[in-house]
Amino acid sequence: MIFIEELASVSWRCVRFVPEGALWPDDALVQSHELRVAEIDGRAIATQRDVFDAVSDAFLFPDYFGFNWDSLEECLRDLEWVPAKGYVLRVRGSTELWQRSSAVAGALVESWLVAAEHWAEDEVSFVLVFGM
Image (tube, rainbow, N blue to C red; front, side, top):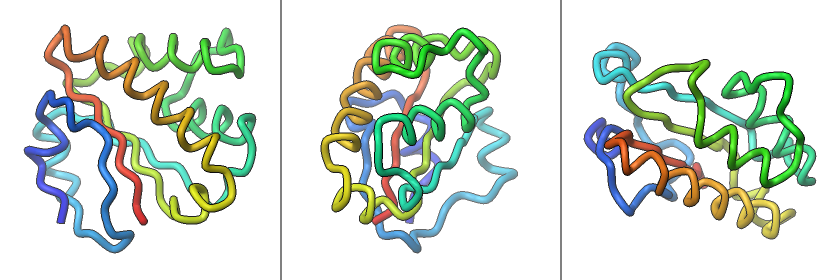
């Protein structure tokens, strides 16, 4: 089970691996904490471009997004177009992503950690959850 406190708190533990069927807080609870939860399908990601497309769609990246790792980090550190008190990216079916494209999954984690460090300065939670 994922607890709302895990999603809403600023922590160095901002990357989590949970069972695919783990229970999530209901939408009303997530909304009451003003969290923006975005989801992507890890089964559909095999390349860097796939992860760029998925994350940019999930967080509604602006047109200037450059579809590279530096641009991903820049957009993840900004997100002014989707204001929230915290951000969560939920990757469903991530076992297949890690098996097929571990370098891409690892690069996503690396970019997420860079952005999470930035958000922590403003006391904004920033959590990446892999459903395994």
